[in-house]
Image (cartoon, rainbow, N blue to C red; front, side, top):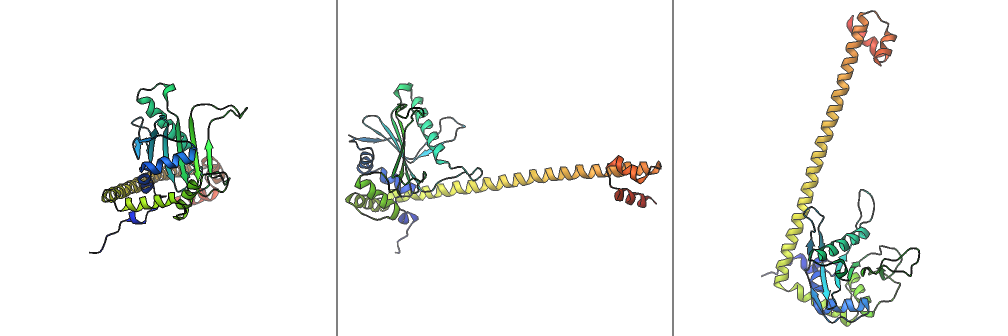
Length: 297
């Protein structure tokens, strides 16, 4: 019997679904965090993978690829970002304000669980980017809040945002992180660590539960695309109808005003006024008044 391949077999680590499942392997994820932050982590706990946080019923929910806490209660959110999203209407890039929103939602979600402000956990929002958003060739861009008047003064809110530029050439990273970047970029194995990642990916792709989950994921993504397409069509139709009504109304008003001017011109002609005077009184052209006069004869 011929084996049926799903698109899962073609996925690489840059895919959200596969990235999440690889990061759910504790040893790999913990090693990446330790290498990035140059620290030892005793253990990590997975909160909700691919969790959608909706703080309020009418708020804009966010989907988190992987959310983790370590034994020191530091929280981490890891995201894979293949494309540099842009608002087509404004031309503005969305990634900076997306990180702002992610941070706000993470903090609000913590406070909803009954914490006071001073109990908010340290957080790291980490984006693996397959593009250089800041165009400075840094391998890692790390952001903390600092005073503009004195950059030595840091606002110690314990919130850190990191953009990992897999194409970067500046700044030091550990050999394993660089090999991970190379693997994400070209699927090339250059270290024992990326060999482990590659073997893990093969194992994940052969897992029947994961394959079933991916089929469900694909169907959900298709449903979302179909819904977005349907909404776009509905919006386009509604806009077209509104524009049609507005255009029809405008045309109707213009036609009504034209008829009113014609009727006024006819009355003034019957009173013996000159064509020139009628044209001035009705805002019609002399030619239009002469045509109306000719039609009355």
